[in-house]
Length: 333
Length: 282
Image 1: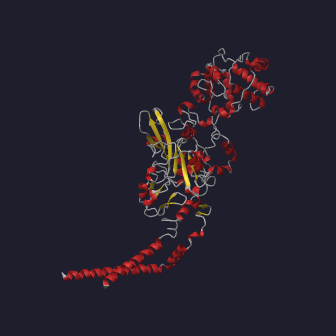
Image 2: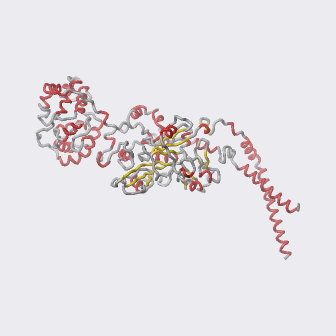
């Protein structure tokens, strides 16, 4: 073989050997172990720390909250869906955010928009609760409100007798109160009456007049009375002119409409009708909620921001409303 | 003429001599680095099977076959999954980079084709208030909507992934448990894979110079957790599990529903199974 060819082949062989040696040297030891990739990278990816820690992690400190949440209808929404990734909480991040703007957060799921499945509870935001924050009425950990509707199975005739014997002297023979300070009972939601009388009886709610009266009532009598009042006509003679401005009250009432209806006739039996109710009674009740004398998680939040003038205006507005439609809705129930 | 030939011969010899010198020098350099080479050799000759379960002591990737389900009839388009994914996987908080995203298909009365938008649509960004938050705007409230639905999308972890086929460096590969992973230290940022994916599941991280995509939260599933999007979904529209386990959520989902995959004609055999989508979804 000519000399120059031998030299050339040696040179090519040397370059090849050098190339192979370089490849052997520079290739990661784990490359080719399972295929054309670096096997160690699998372990590296698997070693990353998770940011979202799951509800079980939250439970170790917040067991009470978790118990309430896991029993209610938001149980499919995990802690971190609303509060964000737990990650370094509580070691580095002492507090996870409690969403400041509940409307913005809640409407992500509950605003009525095209494409959302029908089973998803949705509201038209502009018509639902005005500028009110969702959490004023709904507990975010147990948001359903209808759970508090009491069962009513009373005897109307027995209730009528009991009314005449014990209640009529203050609340009026037809359960239409003779003055502006005591409430009308005629046409009121029976479930609401049961709940409120039971609260007076148990002491959960107190009133100088009502507490001793309610303590003498048996559970059956409470049921009878509620059934009797619910069946009466709420038509009442107009009371004395109210102190507040009904027009101003109408604007404020938008915040109440979500629960009590636009004119104070509610659709949920757990809540009272307030249309055509006595104005002084309404004002006193709101003030009692504001002061914390009457305890209700929803009303406490709503009444907190009201001034005396606001309360007077609201009372004037609702006192002037017709309680009429209430009879119709009750029939359909 | 002859003089010219001789001079070119001389030049060639000089060149060859230089090359020989360079080879010798390289050999000498390699020889001085012998301890390093020995260490390398020791690392390479280590038996690969010392570790019984791979990649972690608690997780053996030969024992799992992961799959993902999407029930579009349940999705409410709240985008909690998109936000959670970004936080979990350090995806840039802007409107252009997503491991997973949600599309909205809206058929208006009298129109034959769906109007499609996602959380990255300018109208939806305006409704959310920033690029770091996500919300579907109520943009069809005054229109006559005939039909509308949401479709979450993510990497399909195809059985025959075209992205892996085109990667020149072995930076992306399909693991034995079915997840297509990216070795970010081997990615050279050529973006062949971004173009090869028929689903648009891959995106390029300009800041880091590497390609990223959904990997079913591999760091979570290897620890026995669910992917972050599945974890935060409030309505159970995302289903994840092991197909080797016949009682896992995904096995039951596939068993109990008529499922379909996106673009079956590509032959990629995707592993994300959909329920409740129609032909416009690809």
